[in-house]
Amino acid sequence: MIRQVLDGALKESNLSVNDLDGFLALPSLAEHHIMEAHFQATSLGLFTRKASSDAKRLGQPSLLCRTIDTGGGGPVSALLQAQSMIQHEGLNCVAVVAADSVGSMDSRTFLQRVDNIFGDESGIPSPIIPNGYDRYTQYQMQRYGLTRDQLRMVVCLQSFHASRHKESLLYQTALELQPSQQTEHMKRDTPKPFTALDSIQQAPSVAPNISLLECAYRADGAGCIILTSESFLNERLRTSLEMEQVKKKAVTILGSGESSGPLVPPAKEQIGGFPFGSDAAMTQAYRQAGSLKATNIDFFALYDCFPICLIRALEATGICSQGDGGNYIEAQYSKLMNAVDSGTEEELIQDPTFFPVNTHGGLLCYGAPWEVPAMYNIIEACQQLNENAVGRQIDDCKRALVYGNGGIFSSSAVAILGKAT
Ligand code: MLC
Image (cartoon, protein in one colour):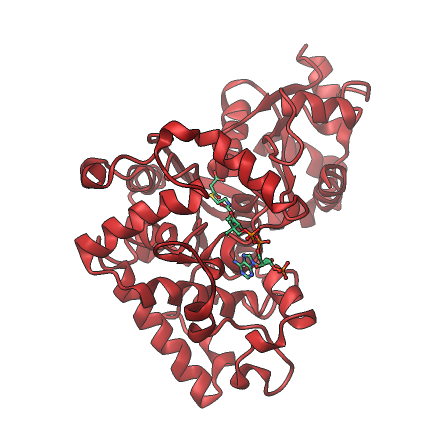
């Protein structure tokens, strides 16, 4: 998968492996290697290829490899690391790759590996990740009156978006295997997968406030991003006409923020005292992007391994105020149901007030290959900015915010993206 996505990204950028002077990779759960980036670069033959003439001229090592491990925040952290390598270490062209195949893992092995990361001393029952997020869910329910149905509505909204993306796992699985998950409304013309509230209510429970359909949807998958310096692109533009098309599609980082928290969630009674990493990372990113705020962002790609993660992220972005995430979701869900009842779903996506979040379906419905999903967030943001999100395009999308979250709210990485030209 890594070779496939690297080749695909290079081709789309009109570049070759010989142009790369940086290579960043994220660890995989299914096939763990120490020094993942070095392992992958060796397997891909990157150390035996020809170094670029720029690297030679500048006397740089032909390839600088780094493995980034901030869990689900990894793709965004790696994007920011690539930016720093370009800005401060003189690199020109860095590839970020992530791949995993947790969808093909048998459930027992998956759960054992995941639970081992946190350990028995976490005091959280297995499955540790859903139960860990449940602790935060309970806090939000008690502190702010978030309701059980509002959490389920997150999945309904995400599934609506996923139903418009043919590569989403929900779309592919539902069409082939699970017609019962489609509502009568959605089946009318071409069948479209949509997870109705009652099917989530009936889904088996995984943790006290999380059902199976409210869990990150385990999948196999991979992604790759290529980040270059502007001077490298301009240089290429002089020698290659095709680069003009590439440059037109280029996206730039306007601002970013990162933050860390404990690996294991604090006890329930202490949660309120812990600042949320996503709040700090968002604030930093908005400030760095020139004091932007939520109203200046057209599209949000927010981590949503469980509904609570998305709800906290909505509040951290400022789309709604703190504690109001559940009500915001309910209002968006009502809008969706009204459109479904009146057969106006097609117009809904053009409505600038309708849920401009995760138009690919997020971890809950597009698919969640362990540390890869925030890569999908970045890719969907690029699709939106380039007006390539066919069937789900947000009008006049000029700025996008991407957020990745690792562990159980243990790492937060945010980038605000905009068109480069
Ligand atoms: C699972 N299924 C879904 C689904 N999740 N269907 C629709 N939407 C979803 N979101 C389907 C599966 O494809 C499968 O279908 C069936 O439900 C049973 O799922 P399973 O996974 O095979 O079941 P089981 O072995 O019982 O395990 C259930 C589980 C596990 C909830 C314990 O799925 C799980 O741990 N999920 C969470 C994954 C997770 O924690 N990811 C990391 C998030 S934290 P079929 O047709 O095959 O029967 C994060 C941060 C970080 O992202 O740093 O990593």
